[in-house]
Amino acid sequence: MVTSRSSHLSRHAKPLHHPVQFGPWKFTSLSDSKYPETQAVIKDLTTRRRLAERSRHLSSALDQVLEAIAILEARTGAILYANTHFSRLFGNPSHWSSGQTFLEQFECRILATALEQARLGRAWTGRSFLNTQAGKRITFEGTVSPERNPEGTVESLVVRLRDISLEVEKDHHFRQAQKMNALGALAGGMAHDFNNLVGAILAAAELIERQVEPDSPIQKRLQVIQRVAGRARDLSKQILNFSRRSDETWTPFDLTDLLSEVITFLQTTLPRNVEVRSDLAKGIRILGDPSQLHQAIMNLGINGSQAMQPAGGVLSISLQPMEALQSVVDRPFQEPCVLLSIEDTGCGMDSHTLERIFEPFFTTKEAGQGTGLGLSVVNGIVQGHGGNLQVSSQLGKGSSFKICLPTHQDLPMRLDLDSPPLNASSNF
Image 1 (cartoon, rainbow, N blue to C red):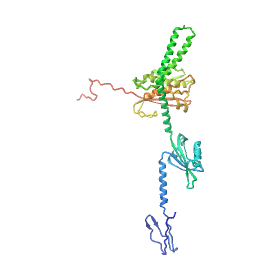
Image 2: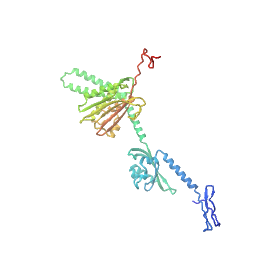
Image 3: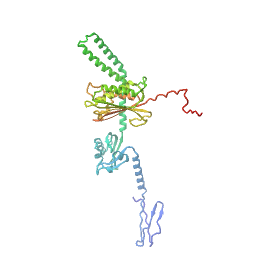
Image 4: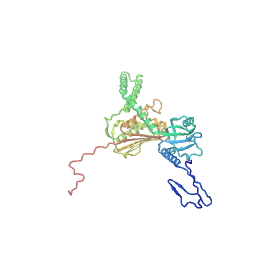
């Protein structure tokens, strides 16, 4: 744009000796011996430079935003601009296939609807799923807004995508914790009354059993009553363990000895086609309730055995000390801890089952074969002992349960007062 213009007429036979500097502008004579007159045109580029500088600042600012931002051509959907975070998540658009548009890259039905709505001049806000350049599936929250020219026509579309996968995962865990707490409160309020009812049923069955002849057909019916009532009592105990949060009965004990007892019991009770292998570090002591941990380990062992049927397999139990802050599990520990691993070579679990295994009353077993409380109780026991439980599994390759528990450091023994100090020397 020409903002100022001046003319310089020269009738000199020779050009000026040197360029003349006037502020920020530089003038050079264009006259020579062939042309008696010359004319110089000056353009003021201040506005253009300011616009270029402003554009550079705007682009730099958008690159600092931790959200994926792209500007699309409204008619074709071609990407006109993408910030750094967009390229980091989905790849640089300049490296995409030739002519590939935004929708061809993502194939997201919800985004297609959003772009069509924005082309009509209406902004869109919502959430959906997309796959990143690394193949990771993320949950995003985004907006698609129309950008109009001075005539009011939609020329481009501004797409903003924010990765909220972590927030969704935290919300899921929070809702899961709420369900667990609600179930615990419900169990605490009803378990004792339920036990009283079961106790009355068992007591009545025992009285009837004493009054009936041993060969009477009623005896078989009484056995059924006692067996079913026994299962109800065991279920009540599991609910109580699930809801219990008190550590009043905790004592230091040797976890290695407890595991040895559990392994001996498993070896004598599990089917013969299940081989139990163990690798236990000696002298591992923790603070907690031995009966609860005994129940948790037995539950994981029996579950692993059932997952290996009918072909059988290997159940491996190991106990090894861990260094503080070692990232074997999701949550690092600031204190010395021990890693208890229980692994099987069974059928494994798919991702959907793996996400729900700790939900109360969720089970993959047939009706009447399980209550769905086993792993919920195990998880509650581990967390109640200040530990962490991490599960990994793959279909056809078995499952692995890793339990990290803080170890208990006993106070050092009192030194014998009659013994000399450790640094004592006979020369003094």
